[in-house]
Length: 220
Image (cartoon, rainbow, N blue to C red; front, top):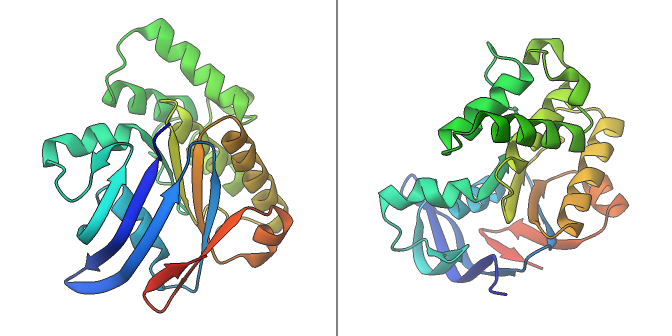
């Protein structure tokens, strides 16, 4: 199988400044990878480059068989449909229930059959232990519960790649541990997971391949 991510001598610019340079990275299906580093070291820029939100300036950069150097703007939504993104700040629609948040994503990504939509929503809610909270709005859920809904949202389209940007940053330690444990289980089922974090205790507790973001580059 081809690599999920294949970066060779990549430079990433943000606001016309070099954020990262000489980045070499290959990620295979089902692999779990941490990107660690201080705040502002470029972790988020690295993840954003993978879904074409931050441009790759030089080098070879392929994600899910898309060439990020030459991708057309009209193809970016198709790339993003194959990537599940988990944000630290949840980004749920606050005026809708958990189930309605998921329904919105499925309809926006081309699902039309109501029965199939309902079935997929129930599947992902059950997988993250939130089947009995489907009717609640985000403000009625704890931080950990909201993050589980965000993970469910990321899983909806069965993506081959999940990008998690500090997914435990707003959670208490025990809840953060359960989230990371679940993401490892997702990887064991064949989905590549890349998680940016500065929480070294989680990295030590749930060991996996670890990349260090420092001095404008990434090393293993």
